[in-house]
Each structure stands twice: as structure tokens, then as C-alpha cells.
Image (cartoon, rainbow, N blue to C red; front, side):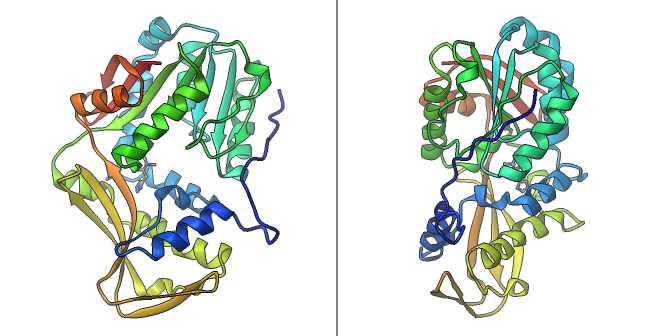
Length: 320
Ligand code: AVJ
């Protein structure tokens, strides 16, 4: 089955992603400058994230993959065959096949805002599972998504691995879980990854690796802004920083100005003093109870939970 794209991201006459521009201009105007983490993932950012998942310090991907490999029989028992798997994000070449292999679904629908990456990973997936219909949708899944008519009537399994939910503050995470429930419908299941709270040194190292790949990933956001939003941010004047925020149980990534700087984005002027930062990512960490609480707040009832052999990462199954 040939993947067929369906374009839903809004662009202005000049080809600018209007939501990206609005988020950046509003975020840079705040007292603590901040840009939502979802804008990391242009083609370069998506590739750099793939590189991050291979780093010795970055344990979440390996831990989650271990769970997917080890628990296939249990997933099959609890989920059953014949579902349409709706993945929020275009999917990794390793995790998605492990799930599809385990549960024998009837269709696969990856949702992503990065169209090129989405089409590439969908084609690779379709080649690996020749009998499986694949319907990629280019969309911002923070809002309710209209699913392809071809999967109407099939029971749904939402798949949201990687602890991407951890990028959101509680209010936004709750909104997303509710949107997912609307997208998938009552009776749907959701398999979702959530990273666990652990010692601070391990957490900080996972977001500040020795090879500097995470620093590159963080700084690429500025390069993307310069390219796509007519910016002149002096990228070399910024340094990557990862901090643990214990109040909110999250790793924060910042881009810290190393000297006073002025720049403009889409014609808007901005100034920062040395030491001031742009907050670029939150990565919340959970316990069994806080993950269940978050699911319940979003309208999902916890049904099962798995962790890896070192208790670093959790995968939860919930029902709408
Ligand atoms: C893609 C949300 C899983 O928060 O761990 C990795 C992204 N940022 N290193 C995470 C990320 C820096 C990541 N997720």
C-alpha cells in the first residue's frame, strides 16, 4: 500500500508556517523567553534527535525499546489484533515495528507536523509490512485530528512513545490527552511512554551529553528560526544548558546568551543580556502515581503498566 500524504499545516503566501512564527514571536516577547519544544523537529532536528537516541547517556529510548521487545505477548493479550494503530509522531524505525509485530493491526496511521520526515518514515514502514495499509497524516496533533476515512469503524490504539508527553506542562498534557480521546473515540486504547524520576546526575547527563549532540539539537532551533522566519540571531553567542527543576520534576533545556545580544525575527527586534536564556524544552519525569493521575485527568483509565529491567522508564496502557 502506497502512503498518501494529506497536508494540514497552515502556511502563509511566503511559505512560512504561521503557527511557528506566532509561537516564536510570542515566546521571545515573554519575561522568561520560551519556545515550545515541538519546533525542534525540522528535518535536521529530527535527524539530530535520532542521533541523541544512540548516545550512551540517553537511556530512555533503549529502556523503552527493551520493554517493547520483552512484552509483546502481553500487549497482544491485552490489545488484541485488528486495531488501527494511530501513532502521535511519525514513528521510530525500531519501536513502531516492534509494536506492530506484536499486535497484528489492520492499519497504521502516523501523525506528524514534519511532512518530509513523515513521508520517509511511512515509506520505510510500509516496505517492512507489505500487507499493512499505511495512511500518513501531516497534522498538528495537539488538536483533534480528522482520521482517514479508510479506518472508520476499526477499533483504535493510540501509540505515543518516547515520553513526548513529558514535553508538556500538566495543563497542556491534559489538553492533549483529551484531544487524543476525541481523535480516537470512546473504547480506544492508548499505549504511552513516560520517563521516570531518578537521580539528578543521570537525568542531567541524558540531556547534556559529552559528545555535544544535545547542544547541537538545542542550537538548531535558532538556525531554524533564522532560516524560516527571516531571523539574524547570532547562534554562536548562545550556549546549551540542561537543569533539573525539582518543583515540577522536570529537566529544562535553555539557550543561554553568553554576552549581550540584539537580533530580529520576522522584522521584530529583540534584546537579551548576558546570562539571560531562552527556555526551549521541558522534559517532565513521573512516578507510577503521577502518571496515573495525569492519565485520569485527561480522561484515560490506567489498565496496565510496564517498566524496563532497571526501572528507568514506564510504558502504560489506558482506556478511553
Ligand atoms: C522526544 C520528548 C522524548 O524529552 O527526552 C531529548 C527530546 N530533548 N534530548 C526528551 C529530547 C533532548 C525528548 N523527547
